[in-house]
Each structure stands twice: as C-alpha cells, then as structure tokens.
Image (tube, rainbow, N blue to C red; front, side, top):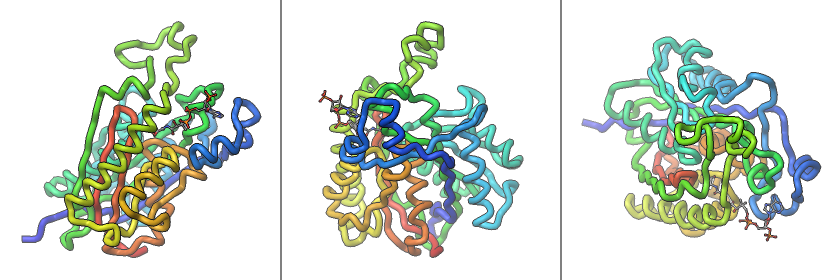
Length: 331
Ligand code: UT7
C-alpha cells in the first residue's frame, strides 16, 4: 500500500502596503542604509499600519487568496495552525480569530510559538494530521506583526524585522510527493539571547515593565548570529546526508530570512549555488514565522512538480531545523 504523504497544494501570501525603507529609518534612528544592507542584506520591509489591526488581519487575506487559488471554500478546511510570536491576544489563539473571520466553521485550530522556526514546526505538525488520515485539508500559516514588539529607537533590532503572512494548504498525496523528512531542534539555554522580557507569567505587564521597554524584542545579536550560522548550516547538511541527497539533487534551498550572511553560509555548507537559494530578505526583512512561506509564494512560478526542496531555519529559543520536501505541482 502506498504511504500517504502531506503535500503542499497551494501557497499564498500577504504583505502590508506600507514600505519602510532603510532611507526612512535613517531619518529617525542612528543608522545608515549602507550599514543595514551590507550587514543584513535588507533594503526595505513592510509594516502593518492602522489602529486595531493585528496578525490575524494579515492571515485572513493570505488564506482567502489561498482558498481562491485552490478553488475551495473555508468550509472545506479541517484545521488551521498559525505559527506566530505576535498573536492578536495572549488568548484566545489567533487561529480561533482567523477561523471566525474567514468563516471556517468546520475547522479547529491552534497557535504555535516557535519564533523564526514557527512555520517549520507548524508544517511538520500539520503534516502529521494528513499522514495519519485524520484530516484532508490543513492550512499552515506563518504570520508576524513584528512592528508591534519593536522599539524604533533601538537600532540593532528595529532595522531587521518586518510584518507579513503567508499560508500553505496541505493535502494527502499518494505519489510520494510532499514532506519527506524533518529534523527539528530546540535548546532553551539560548533564550537569554533573544526574547521578550515581560508580558508573560514570569513578569506580567506593569507600569515598570512598560517604562523599562520590556515588551519589545531583546536581542544580543552576535551570539545569535554565531549560533545561527552553525545551526542552520549543520541541520541542512544533516538532512541531506540522512536522505542521501547531493547538492545536484536539490532544486531549492528555502532558508529563514534573518541575515543574508547566515543564508550564504548555509548555502555554502550545502554546496549550493546562489541561483538555487530563495531570497526575499531585501524587500521584506525578517518576518519571523512568515519568511519561509513568503519565499514559497514569491518563487512559486519557478517551482516544478518533483523538485526537491530543503527548508531551513534558526531562531529564538533557540529553535532550529530543516524539512526535506518534494514539490507537488506545476503552477
Ligand atoms: O531571526 C531570528 C534570529 N536572529 C538572527 O539570526 C539575527 C542574528 N544576528 C545578526 O544578524 C547580527 O548580529 C545583527 C544584524 C543583529 C547585527 O550585526 P553585527 O554585524 O553582529 O553587528 P554588532 O551587533 O556586532 O555591532 C557592530 C557595530 C556596533 O558598533 P561598535 O560597538 O562596533 O562601535 C553596533 O553598535 O555596529 C553597530 N550597530 C549599528 N550601526 C549602524 C548595530 N546596529 C547598527 C545599525 N546601524 N542599525
């Protein structure tokens, strides 16, 4: 009997209209466009503007486009997993809100907080429901409104991140296409280098935490950079070895978009030329859980049925990992 795999059958994204360029950042924080571009590869990022708008407001247009592309209704969806560290509320989950806003009344859902590895972890989780036969249509969204937790006077963090969302549809496949393998890792001792200090149960919000700017992203960039370069490269090489893949076998690397230097190091370790590496950091910056599906959305037209892809991430936690998948359709 052929094993049922979970294949991506559609992808769609949404980025807000407002473009925050490096040149605009220069006007209110002590930085230069040249520094940002040479150290990170970022030229601009999108920001969700508007009172009362949250992460779900980016998930909704992404999912509506996804449903339209696949020609199905929100009522056909069994499960929606939203990977995010910037949920609309601490509770209920953003997935709950999204199900309501799109009218997915037959679906259930939950949020998954894996920071920059959130989409990777959620994709692997969503795939289990397809492989087990429990569900037929699972949506996995990576979405973050990073601008909600950034201090725009702090030059080492506010220049990196942007807002965005993208979603994939997972469906059963009996041709061996879809997710083949995954290696997922966490190391909680890395939490000290990249986190949000207050707003959780350890340090609930207070006047003091607001005054001390503890609801913003804190990052000690250098140690994260060093761990990310090694972690993302090693796990990508590990999944290649485990599946007997050479660099010639791989059509595309889909890397987390945190810093172009980390992406280059990963591609080099895998023996891949730059033309096999998906890159959109220059226009969106680091959108945390949204980077991987936004890449798939941007490059969808270049993908061919059977293409072998390696998705690879590293982020806060630390969390990191890689997924090996075979693309399931021609656009
Ligand atoms: O996605 C989640 C995981 N996150 C990551 O993977 C991010 C990993 N880290 C990085 O990408 C890099 O560490 C950063 C982009 C955050 C920072 O780049 P860096 O090359 O590591 O810079 P640095 O922190 O070592 O700082 C070097 C210098 C410092 O000045 P001094 O002390 O040498 O005088 C900083 O103050 O650059 C200065 N600097 C800036 N200068 C202009 C830091 N940020 C800026 C800035 N503009 N925006």
